[in-house]
Amino acid sequence: MSVDMNSQGSDSNEEDYDPNCEEEEEEEDEDPGDIEDYYVGVASDVEQQGADAFDPEEYQFTCLTYKESEGALNEHMTSLASVLKVSHSVAKLILVNFHWQVSEILDRFKSNSAQLLVEARVQPNPSKHVPTSHPPHHCAVCMQFVRKENLLSLACQHQFCRSCWEQHCSVLVKDGVGVGVSCMAQDCPLRTPEDFVFPLLPNEELREKYRRYLFRDYVESHYQLQLCPGADCPMVIRVQEPRARRVQCNRCNEVFCFKCRQMYHAPTDCATIRKWLTKCADDSETANYISAHTKDCPKCNICIEKNGGCNHMTSAGCV
Image (cartoon, rainbow, N blue to C red; front, top):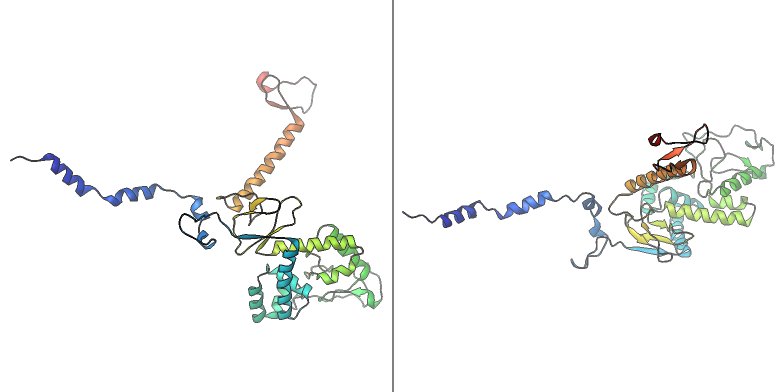
């Protein structure tokens, strides 16, 4: 009986061959690494118009001028002030504390309005508030007796004379403080509204600085806004959902990561690039020290540091 070995072999090969086996092996060999995590959820950032048009790096953002940014901030402030029945300056402090997330603020206001004001540091906490123990018409800073009309206080009722308040606010503004100007009483967390600070600043130069620092703090606290890191660039970048994505200023053409304002670093995350930049800065300081305190050996080019003795120096490798 004759046997066709070729046909038998081909039959066994066909039985053993699994077309999905190759695909499974290829899938096992693939290692997406960090890139897969980087692009998670990117489909929601862009409007997909077919596979050819889809770009995972696309990120929708808007470049705003100073006036446009100020208008957007004031719009939030005005609407919130009318709902909470507070002044515009107090509404700004509340928005800063909650990163301008109006929906969260309104939810907290409905559940516990008093606690909202305490958390925003515009009202004292009744359970922890320590009233002033100083005699009336007495400034707790300069220890002087002053007239009642010259004593000023926030909602905490910690009274200080106008002169001390002026010096306090002027020094902080000169140091670059905006929203962070607070009560002078020890352990009092209350922040001073801007309409309280402006009359205490002695000249227009300080008032203009204070306006700039306030605007900086307002933008930096807003979850949808970022100041352009370009040199002397006044532009503000606005997005719908903050992510570690590439944005570019249309004025100075600066390209940076929206989330951390560092150079664009995809697919590395912001924490890793921050560590890397810190390491580079440390290495730079080391290089500066070596350059200032050492010289290269003319024979072996090893860095030598003179720490005493005569001017005759030799490296360990040239002895």
